[in-house]
Length: 221
Image 1 (cartoon, one colour):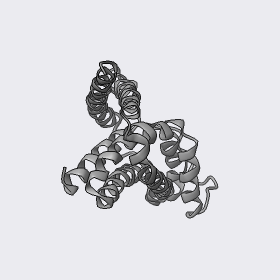
Image 2 (cartoon, rainbow, N blue to C red):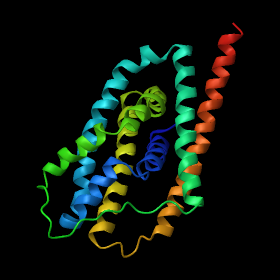
Image 3 (tube, rainbow, N blue to C red):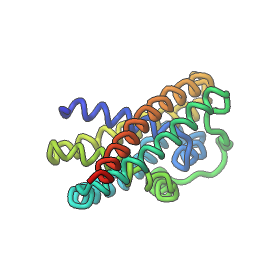
């Protein structure tokens, strides 16, 4: 895998995760009507700071901890289950028409927080989401191990590919909310969720099959 391909792959996987509604998107919706587009990049900055720390911690201690086949099998099975659940839920919700843009936009004249406190809100929203921890320990942790085959350059490229998806979607979401949702409809949003959900199901199947293969290898020893 080359560095450009790694960047695009990391971006695609990250985008599939970030479009799913959660605490970060709720924070953006609650503030974007008052402060507009700038809310998304600032919240994404707080989010990316914590992800920088997570990537560094995983990369520094990952090779020794995850080189054992038992650890790789556990990550494959757990990560595969997580991706299958998340992707399946997204795709099914989009198919049934249950997916809508996050709601709850406050009035524009309501008091809001300062611009730089939005960075802090991005961090708080991130650490309050249990899925964030599970994602990095299982799915993203395994991809970082792959990125390490290209050295620290691979880890850095993976990180920037991932947070690029955060900045793009958070910027879109804050822009849509700040402008009154004039161009991104619920139907378009459902389509995006559905495509990303199918992609995550595909990745989950790959994860799970890899984990099953490792489990069979361990059982036959």
